[in-house]
Length: 185
Image 1 (cartoon, helix red, strand yellow):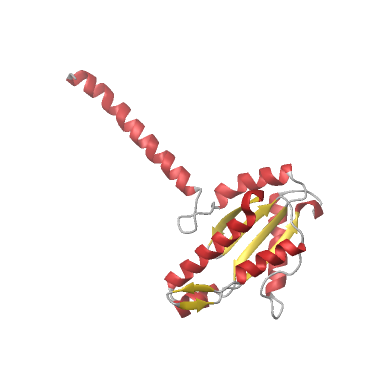
Image 2 (spheres, rainbow, N blue to C red):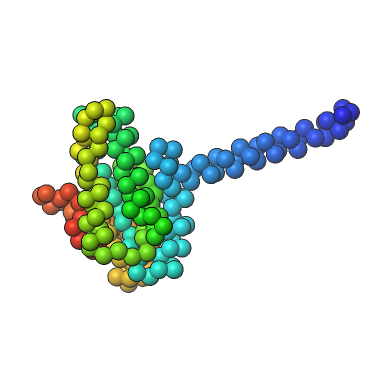
């Protein structure tokens, strides 16, 4: 290859490499590196499509209770294991009928086509199962707030998340609050 052809092709090679790098960064920004769930950006567009197609969809907001205490007691690696286990359990529960995401920290979200009270109870039971980490059984408690989109005056994801958040904090304020036992608020 002559020097002129090489000089002309170098910028194109650099651009192609940079484009590949940017595409990789964009793809990974839509997935949480710890849990592999979708991030807020990756989850929101899919969740909005799902609630448009399924007006009886259920939006969930989840929070790992006393996460700081878990980290302080068992260590940050155990906290990461609890987040990863919560994410896997939530994703498995959603299956092909919904989508799960991690908002950040110890907060998770999900939207599924539909669910009844028994389905929510099953999820809460699944999320409350202790985690075995480094030979220790670690208790994991998750509060779950839920909102049926059809129950809102205007079917919007942001309103459903706000209602699920209010429901979750209502549960957190009750004694013995470990998880939602109601299908929706």
